[in-house]
Length: 214
DNA sequence: ACCCAGGGTCATA
DNA sequence: TATGACCATGGG
Image 1 (cartoon, rainbow, N blue to C red):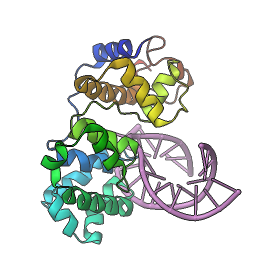
Image 2: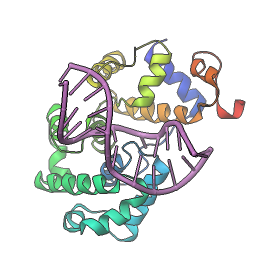
Image 3: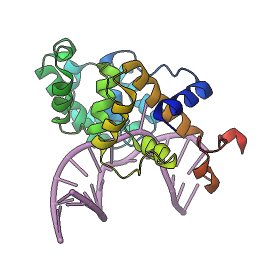
């Protein structure tokens, strides 16, 4: 089954997802860091805290007290690590001239620059590339590996860049498609029943395995 | 009482 | 290059 066909199946099943769940590009960047190995519901609480304290702003975050910021980020987990990563990211972000300046940068260059920031790995960088800068970068996460290895399109243990390249080659550069695809993969992953071992065979392979079905 | 979540870094071999 | 420890909350 081609990646495009998988997309069509997902889209017919779940419809448009309207990602990223954040209003401004900057909020998307912060959300991308906060959601590292963390459920989105926990991230929302941290973002609400930042908004409640008028702190969702790069200039304010770089001047924030570490302990106070950590307290706001607490619900998102790894709060000490994420505090450092966010302050560090904001320093870089402002140093580079902010969104308007970064927007003019070449896609390859921008991605490499993001990856050079401590705390920004490939997936976080690509979330930012795709959803904040609207660049045609296919995001690879654990769900992507799991789904497509179950479907037999990949082994699952390949390096990040290898998988990204594979999908970008097969799908062609398409921001809207990548946007929806990643969101749909995450949406579908949440529907997989983890208790039933047979579910391993059903995500789009067979019938289906939605939680409602069990 | 477990298990996992929209990862990444650092130290070690 | 590649494995392991570590980071930590909240929901199932």
